[in-house]
Length: 394
Image (cartoon, rainbow, N blue to C red; front, top):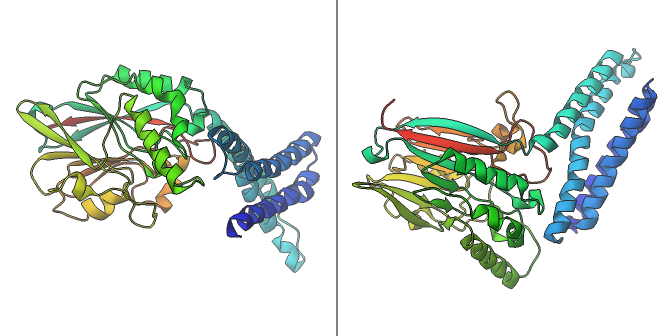
């Protein structure tokens, strides 16, 4: 009952906003073009959600889900600025309650700002493929001497469904990473959004990644087929298929396990956990840091790959005995929005994006990801390749 009622309630809300926009905003405009545009966008918002409902998020095939994502994006890009315009329009009419003139200037300002939000969000549908490289230098005196200058390329949250079957962007990402000539490449989870078969078209490009010390990956919360309706047997088969597809790429999949990067005579432990979710955002937990590396208090230099940065907040930064020098995570996407350095993800996550450090120098980097979940748009939070250079001294 609840799963049926929620989308219908959302449709009702969207329809009410669309009706208000047409009746009390669009029809009040002097410009015929503006009236037509606002009316057409209102129809698009409603139609997009109807298509999303009809296809079904949890039951559709991967190709169907991509179409549903496009439809949802149409609704999302329109309805967010329309909610803002509607709220400002209602506020501008409040003086009528005490028989004063409405604040027409506020109404116009709300329409102008809402239009700017609409443009930014629409542009984000294209900038979501504007690949960026973030360079960071990490000074750590505990770094073994032979690894001074170690270059790590990190990517996260590919969500390959968000590219359909088009491999052009992922191929470009692979080429850019290889051009950086990192010593090691790591991927911090969520290669798919719902099903393993999303990965099939991209096995070829992902097999071309190259790094002398290896190419490693972990699983994220979306990689266990928990976001689609299927039987337990089908879910287990899907997880097995994902692991098989991974074996055909350049990635070595770390599942609560550790590999050792060696540059004689020094060694670094590269630890990879299965998904561990803690804190306020709870997803299914499949991993164990203690299983991946039983003695986290030893003096081995350690780099941890774990999808959800909440593990660092709750179990590493808050625990002085957890001697993990560098943790690499993803998961947040910066909520696919970052404007002038601020992201709405900061309202939900203690570590929404970028580099963080404890007083004793243990660090976390949160990559904002490559693909998208939900709307196919990124406003400011462009897909990111992180290049971390580790040094013993400045």
